[in-house]
Image (cartoon, rainbow, N blue to C red; front, side, top):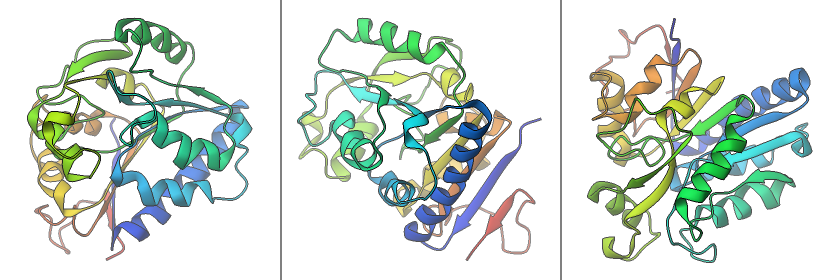
Length: 260
């Protein structure tokens, strides 16, 4: 049976610290039990505090961590400020010394990259997927209506207007026309294959998507709603991203805990 846990923290700083503590525990267990932790890491402004805290966590043998990332723009060089490869190098790999990583090179033929990295990803189970939820409810770059059926590990997708505007809002691009129209994205089904999923979702700009994904129907129109079908997912919210949820302080579902 699916077991979705929802944790609500006061602000994105406490959210980042608490999520990192959880993630560090899971990494240590995966390394202890399997000798290697295979992880998927999200990028974007919502992950800043979490990754900063995680890279400072003690007693993680990062040499025994194998990293995949969720998505990358087609045609964007690694030198561009919005490159997710650049992001992961600067915010995770360089700070921890991870040596085993598989990047989606958006400057190569995307169909070739999808096959090559997908083959590596599918070779063994993934222990932990760190994800976010987009302002349009997307999971990775699976914009609505998302493909809930494909079993392919990665897809080449078209980015919708809301997704491209989000990238401008976060400061990665000056205007929507500068955002690439296509991206390589991990598929929804591939994300759900992870043994554990930890979602990091701060900020008021995510509140509408959080409400749709947690209180609406499980639907391709709210892609991250599919997380409710995973047997081991924890979604971390702050006060702002949880602000539109209809749960009162006294009638919160038993799966929800709050540090407010």
